[in-house]
Length: 191
Image (cartoon, rainbow, N blue to C red):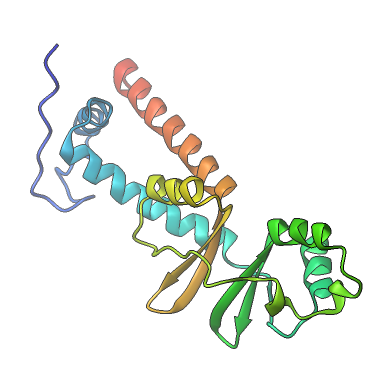
């Protein structure tokens, strides 16, 4: 079976004739995406980046943070009250660590008196794995699975932009795949 030839476009994404405004061209781009064509991957990557920015705007608007000097007990209380899996450890605007459910689980094995009164800096994950906003969702998921982490701070030029969880990323991938299927069905069945 011959692979589909990639659809090429020298026009900017979203420009007239770029495939986004014409249902026939859009259908060809989506079909090429399924077949693995290069131009369609560029189109999908552009969409992925837009969606990821929207996801970060939604999820990143509330970042739960503590200072390195706050107690472990305070951090755990905040995580519990906010129903989140981690808090960011910040010195001013600088990300210095992350304190997660996994760190809390390690505390239970230590059985050390007064541990919840100690500062977060004693048990946080220093130098957390961060990702740039330009990283694809798929590569971000690979980072999570390869490094066995559930939360990725998104950082650009030293500035914290947001926090995405593996759940956020999986939800995006599922929604994106549903969108591709819907576009293909619309193309097949027509308006």
